[in-house]
Image: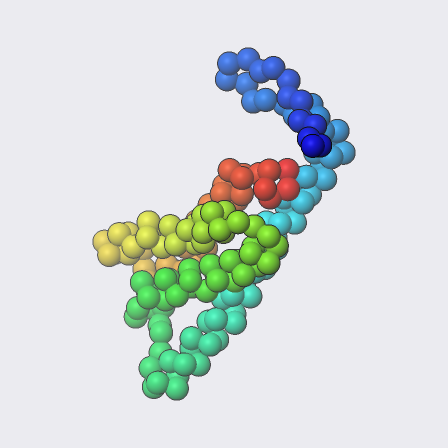
Length: 156
């Protein structure tokens, strides 16, 4: 039975982050590039999900004689956008071989900003028209943090 060699890690002192001595600087740099590329690909998958599923949703609603308005129904519009981005990313992530745990975690990062912003909306701290823009401002760094949490999976 053949076993894979384990990566050697240096001993670390209390509070220090272990250093992966099994990788060269070029390998670490390549991992950072893969991480950045993966992040940009995730953003592109989000955009595709929003455009495709958003168009389908609006088309179906138009056929039913109604519409979804971000100013009149900001909660529904916000959840619809989070769903659309999640589907786009989930399809892309599963196609790339990511497991369900990391895929669902990333999809959760699409919904958390909406749920966090709803109380501010209900208290009239933020306007319905700005809800989706604010959601995106929170969503993108949150997605980055989820990726950092699983950086070995995402390229580093």
